[in-house]
Each structure stands twice: as C-alpha cells, then as structure tokens.
Image (cartoon, rainbow, N blue to C red; front, side, top):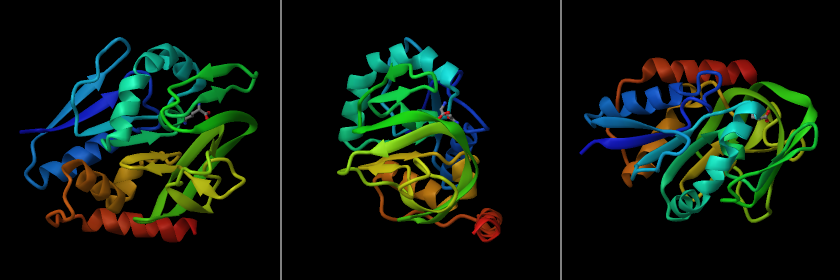
Length: 231
Ligand code: GLN
C-alpha cells in the first residue's frame, strides 16, 4: 500500500521551491522501502484520502485565485485537521488555514477558519533567513512574507524565533503546531534543510514512534552548517 501525499493547489501555491518538501518526504520514505503516491488536488477537485497533505506558499494574487475554492473545501479540511491527519502548510498555505488574510490595501480575504488565527499584511515585508527552536530541534529556513499572523491564545506555535521574524516579528512565535498540523513561514524548502522535522512528519503520518535509520549524513551536515551560520 503506497503512502499517499496530497499536494493541494500544486499550480497556484508553490513558491520558492516549496515542492521540494514533497520530494524530500518521498525520498525519505522510499529510502525506508515505502512506496509513495503524490496526488495533485487543484481548484474544483475533491480531496481524496491521504496520509500527508502539503500546501505551499503563494503570492497574494494566487491566494485570491484559490480563496473561493478553499472555502468550499474548508469543512473537510477542518475535519481532517481535527481528526489528526498530518498536514504541512508553508507561508501562504499556512495562512489559508486561518480565518482571514487582510491585504496591504485592506481587502479582507475570507479563508477556511479551520484554526483560530488571522493574518494582516504589513508595509514592511519580512524577508530573510529564519532559525527557530521547535520541539524537534533548531529549525532553519527562509521567509518572505508581508502577512503578520496572530494566533489565538489557545494555539501552540511551532516554535520560538531565534533569528528572523516568524509569525509577526513581534511576539517571537513562529508557525503553528495543532495536533498533526504543522504551519510555518519557513521556505527553503524547509524539510530538506531540517531532516528531523521531515522524519517527525513521516512518523506522525505512519503513526509510528520510531523510523529505520537512513544515510542522511549530508543532510545533517547541511542543517548544522546553516544553523551555525544564522545563529
Ligand atoms: N502572500 C502571503 C504574504 O505575503 C504569503 C507569501 C508566501 O507564501 N511566501 O504574506
């Protein structure tokens, strides 16, 4: 039985090589002898059953393109999130899990409302390398967003900012971790740069506590060198 990875809006939400996260998950699963099936789900498509869902980043223009469709999908997306399905959402893909996104010219884009948070665009874009402390270790990536995200107090961030802006450049929070839903502003792509995060997502998708070790010495060296360079 293949591990199913759903790539939501592959044509619209896929900035700065974010699809590299899918390649990373696929390679790390195949290295452990799992078969992997990647299914693109676009505007108007139904969401099939999956083991991991991935949503990449998107410019404001693309977020407007998909907002009607994501609202149509919000009930099943909310169901999947609350039932503990594994999901990774990057930047704009993360933002669409919230209630709304207010653009620079104060246009409010209503979103899924799957989780209690909102995003409002600031004049000063938040661009640069980011390092944050997560429950899975120091995590490194690259951020480029105008949106400032504010989490409801009951939500747990994915991490605490060490270098960079994170959710809003104010409260030192970065991303979100709710059940098995991971949201982050870290492009990079984030998973190849952080093998421990990639394996955490795989473990949760497979509902296992441990994974067979693989030869990822190069990835670990890359991760460590980036963390030391940016902290
Ligand atoms: N358009 C959103 C923002 O500027 C998301 C950008 C992104 O996905 N990199 O905040």
